[in-house]
Image (cartoon, rainbow, N blue to C red; front, side, top):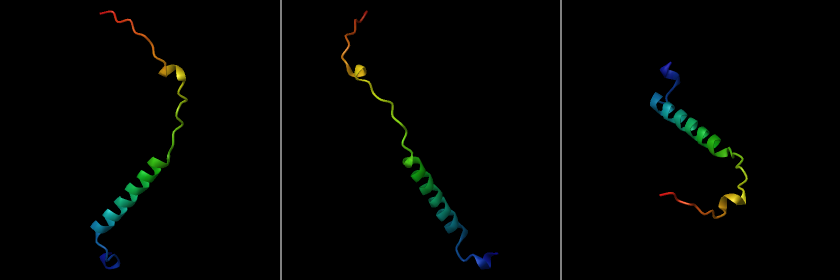
Length: 52
């Protein structure tokens, strides 16, 4: 029924696409994964014996 929708289909498509994009971006950045605890041993300096 085109008489009932004065807004063009392209405008509706753009509006719904932007709403979907904003919704996905907000959901993506609202998730905070638990980072594993970094042990201090990973930052200790180790000597490498290179076998060249």
